[in-house]
Image (tube, rainbow, N blue to C red; front, side, top):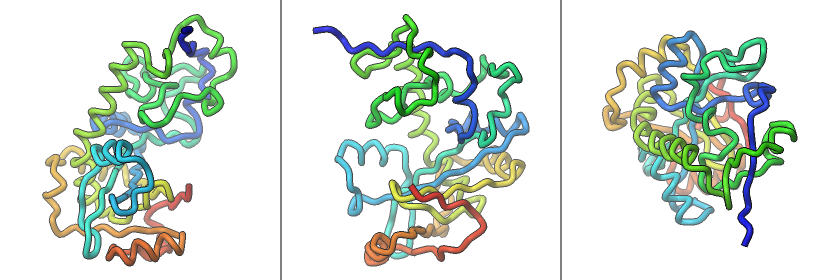
Length: 248
């Protein structure tokens, strides 16, 4: 049986470096901030009783989350730190090449492969031009990345797990306590660069350092909000200028 090879080679168009937030490990976020660039904090929450997907997907999400207090119950919170590149990456040169190529984040090294094991690689979901997919370089075979890429993907997934508690503790330190609900929306914060860097520098790596910190959930879907309120979760008031609420 012939294998299903996906071939890809970067053509240096720079389009993947524009109009996005770039997920970073905690160490990468620290480097990004030290360079003088801004980092967004994206938070989402879930619990097992309202989980709509498979048990394998739940295990994956739980591994990169932290259990926190919310009203009279507990939820799992995932915090993602992401480099701000909403116009374009601040490290992108005028020739559309990377200005920190040797120190570029893991997610940039992995692209266009997916880090989430439950999201298949699809050319039509990528912004790269057609000629990038006409290369002789094999990116993946039967959905599995080549060995070098697979090692980077595993490194990224491990960082997601090992950084999880520190990132949620940093949120608590900064008072970022409203989360969206997974697969419904994203709550996106843009904390002051200096304050976030100080919080990262002083992070103890344990969200239990903030036992009295209580989270709230925001949803704009009335039926989902009613269901979560019945689960005794603390629901946030919808109007706030502290974060951007991006409905999915």
